[in-house]
Structures are given as C-alpha cells and as structure tokens.
Image (cartoon, rainbow, N blue to C red; front, side, top):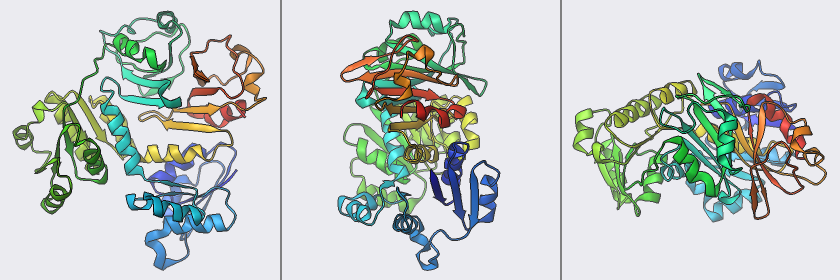
Length: 429
C-alpha cells in the first residue's frame, strides 16, 4: 500500500513506526527537517521536506486541506485528525465526506471516552471491549493476594473453564506471549481475553475490587477534561480544578452541574481543602505530562482509589506506571491506532495500541477461504509473537485451544507484539 503521512509530529512519528516494516511505500511530509530526521532511518520510509498543503495562507487548516487534496489526487482513503469537535457536527461531517475525506478523528473525544470507560472498570488498568462487549481485553497488575501469583499459564487455563485466557505478561518493561509452563509472579502485569460472563471471575482472581465511582475530581479544564465533565456531571459529583482564573470563570458558565475550582492542583494544602481525600477517582488532564504525573501520584498517596493521568510524553509512560498511577491515557497512541486500522488490507473492526507496551490487540473478520480456516490453530503456522485469544461466531463466544478451527465470517481477537503485526493480516484475508 502507498501511504502518505502529512506531518511528522508525535502522532505522525508513532504511526510511521507502526507501519514501518509492513511492506508499505510510506512518504512522510513535514516542513520541519528536525522532525523528519527522527523517521528517516525507518525501513520503507521516504521523507519530503515541505508544506503539506503548498498554500501558506491555509496553514491553519493544513490537515483538512491536505486530506482533501490527497483524495482529489487519487488516494483511495483520506483520513484527517481534527482538533475541534465542531467538525464532527452532522452538517459539517457530511460536508467533509462530500469533499472526499473518509474519516475524521478527534483525539480528545476518543481519549475522553476511554477515560469514561475506565471509570466503569476501576479494578483494571485497561479494559477494551470487542464485538459489542461479548469479548474483552482486561489488563491488571498482580500482587501477592492474586490467584495468579505462583501459578503457571496451564494452571490458570484449567481454572478458566475455557471462558478466559492469559494472552500476555509484562515484566521488567518487556511483554511476552506466555506458554503453558510460564509462571505468573507478583508485580507482573497480566493481559486476559475473556468472555463477558467471566470478566467478573477474572477480576476476583486478580485480587482487585471494582469500586463504584460517585465523587470525581478532574484536574485541568482541557478539551478532554471538559468533555469528561460534560458527559458525567449528571451521574456523578464532579469537581474540576483549573489553574487559569479566566478559563475557570468561563467553565463555570458552561458546566452548570460541575463545581469549578480555581486552584493549583500541585498545592497539597489546596487539594486537601478541596476534598481530594474523599474522592473515589482522580483524572489529571492538564495537557502537561509532568503536572499530570505529579498530581496523580499525590492523589494516589492521599487514598484516591482510581487515578488516571494523561501522559503525552511517551518516554514518561513506564515511569508513571512504575510509581503507582493506575492508568495512563495517551491520545497520540489512541489516534495512531485508529488510523493504523485503515492502512491494513484485511477487515479490521477494531485495533487498540496498549499503553506502556508496543503490543496491539486487533479484531479481524475472517474472509471466506482465508488461510486460517484451512486447518486447526495447531497447524495454522500462526506467528509465535501473536496469539488468537477469542472468537465470536454469531451469538456464540469461544476461547480457542490449539485444536479449534476458525470458520469464515468469525470475528477473531488477536493479541500481537510489534514484530508480528505486519504478518498476521494475511491469515484472515
């Protein structure tokens, strides 16, 4: 596939890394030579220094203009990242579709939805639904109290009754696809594919308890913060902390059921006075990774049960997880995952780039006569660094073993490490 990435910023850079090595012809265009230097050494990538639009006066709208121009010049798919929810209003969205833009992505909206989903699953660090909720990926760290600790994968598979499966373990900043004799240790982060009915059992085995959220504190009146407050202020007691007084005043006018506080979230005394110790959840989305990490760590130490931080600096993610922050949200990875889905030749219904890991989890629709349907999984020759964790067939859900046979039109949920991602699509096509 021939792919043009307009812009070599952090999203463009991350997307280029995901696509590199996948036998695509990739061109990255940016006016900043320094940004191009970061991607120039990747395989299959050609860089061009220059304005993506060539119309200097339209620089502010460069992503939209570039996407329209690309479609007019013959691109099969044109995808644009936007930074204003106004573009997604029905009339505007229809206009852009008529101009040739196939998909619009608003990272702040996607990130806000991810935070809201995680607030409903407080015992996990990540929770991803597939096939309308019939399958889910559940991610959590294990401690000494967990049923997993000291057991092998075979032991856990025997416990599961074919209703869930461990598909990966993260340990010492490395993620592996485990085999039956691999053991779980305290401090591991475990990735489980489970059917809907077994999700509660999985969490019981993990030693984690799901907490009902009633009181929520949001730090930062960013677009993500405002969107979370807007969607949750009718259900929860929401308090939003904003440092900028003018911004706080404007937010107070628009968020009529959210309590807006003009304070510095880094001030321990101020946060104590505003009742952080009585909060069930704390979400830091100021737009500054350092501030979000610091305040989330503070909230955790003050007893808040569920702490979520937006960390946009990719180099900080492992640090943030290591100091006890429950969940990290990175809108660059979220956006790159959504875009990556449309570069694949197979029918991919969903894809999620897992924070703190370069692994991906994908949902494929199996095509008639696809190679994966020709034999049992034992003899399919599927890559070692990927695993099929769940199958949805009509109304039935399966956690497949080595003797399982996949049929056409099944939906397969696959956990994959980076090296396998370019290889696995052909099995389902």
